[in-house]
Image (cartoon, rainbow, N blue to C red; front, side, top):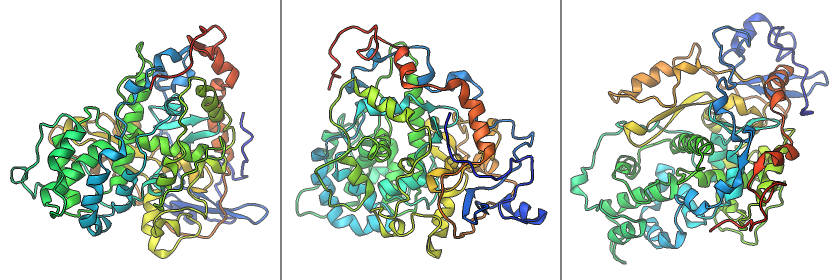
Length: 519
């Protein structure tokens, strides 16, 4: 089991003392505080990611641990047939298109709309579409998906749960965690679709571009800008399975054109949850996964970030864009060999302790927009970034889906990933009972605000009070005991993984066949 460092904070059924001598009145304060400072016997100050909630209260029957074995990660399957994962062209056909197809249009629209994009908060994000988002490593993606837990929405690494957070998305894309939550019907149609010359019958992205790109030297019209945003959202960001621009992206594109403050980062994270759930579930089908869609390019860039040092990922190309995501696009390995599964599975299983590799964006050398680059460490932030960090670290509800029938609701639970922010890890607890947040909820009447009000009705308002402390990846004894209880009977080493394989060059019984994937 992991030899993770353990701080000497008592367990939750004892007296919790973040600061020595804290009285009962102070303890009540910590029930609503996001940052919980504490000191060790040597005088070093650290902080937990709160709030602190009594760990033994009966109303929290769900301890975030899966109760249904069918949601356990695929890596725990009795047998794993890698031959089902050979045709990666079909599996990942919905990745963003080659940049050359849209770069000319992007540059034309950017020439006139860049100031509008800056005001809306999407300028850096759109810059990513200038780089190779279409490149992916199928073995790396599938290996990670093997560890995805569909109940907790997290990857189960030996050291604990890890997952992209809103901080990771900010570093990769330049999107802030601020803005209004997007869901169907949240914005009224201020611009009539009938007034725009947008053609909906184009069956390919290239045909859509050709139909809507303006002539050189002519101004970018409202119609062209909204069409471009629809193309960018469907092809480069959310990667629709139909490989064409659907009409239902009009509402969001219109909102961005009108410079509405939409929180795209939460929409993007929820969409990643949805596609990872679908990808993980598809692994269990007899025919294996096919036609995976959604922002899996974000997963690729996040994996590049956490594997960069461990696997010595390098690139000879230095992008001119000062954004972590631009750099990460250059690190995607290009050799598609089934043997690479061994490398990636072994790398994931080697995370027996939480290391700085799993928190790649809290380093002082971070590149990106100044509002994040100068404030990417919670222990050293300016007053202007307090609201931003409150959103990074506070529990919330995030939603995916452009149409009512596709809406999925998820809890954003940063308390599960405290160490990714340089904070110490307590045993995480849900802020709402499992049955009150159903990811498959469908609001028949479209009254999303009423549903959100019900879910977000917390007993206490969460408060974020900045404080000075030293970053640390410590865990409490309570957390370590909790994780060991869950993980002990699921311990897996690389040799045990190989024994699960069949019909694979990696398995001792597998056929002698070419290990190269189809491209």
